[in-house]
Image (cartoon, rainbow, N blue to C red; front, side, top):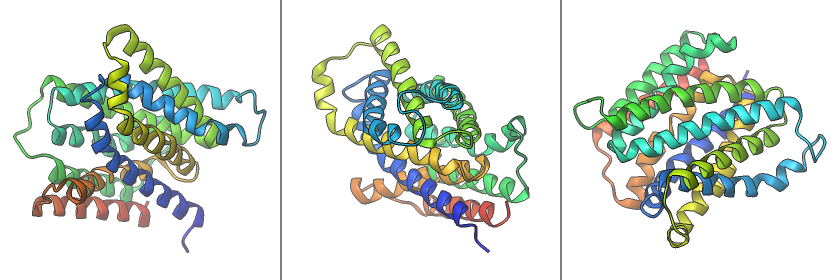
Length: 286
């Protein structure tokens, strides 16, 4: 019998992956006008503002966060700030396809790190993770693999994202999800903006030119998708969440084909199929 809570969580994570995949275009356009940390700082600020009234309307003292929400939100926000900014800077020095594949390595890293958070995935999760990894490789990698400066930054990003998934999985079960999400957005935006004002150069004109990518990446990718991640991980395990969220690469390829006219090769289609199969196996045989 299907557990309705788990099914609902899986559907929310699937929607999260779709929004993140579609946001790829917005993020790529946005960095043409704003440096990485500035873009991240502004979009996470927009996500914070969008979520604020919903989060503070939830149960609990509306003026204060619980200890778990505060601790978990700050920790998740620090990890999110490190991961997203490493990814943005890494993409500058490598190809988007290689960056997508390397970032997606968290689908395999999470099961390895799981025991540190008292989560021991079964054989279905392991098989699903490696199938998803193989699919991600077919979908994203188009050239000889070589470790360049950008590749190394994105590889570190993948490890940080892995810890982020596990931290969210841990604290979402102890907190009100929307308030936890709000705290992590606020932390990430403050850290990104601090870095941007300290080390980057950008103008109000750049913000104006990037306004629509910022709105989508901020309100939908952050305010909606990252919030759905926190809500969904309250009722599922980290390994399953990582596998489903790795489908972001599939949706990025599909939306690129639909809206930008990018070609989906037979290799890419096989990659999408493997990732879907890996996600399915992880759910059927956890």
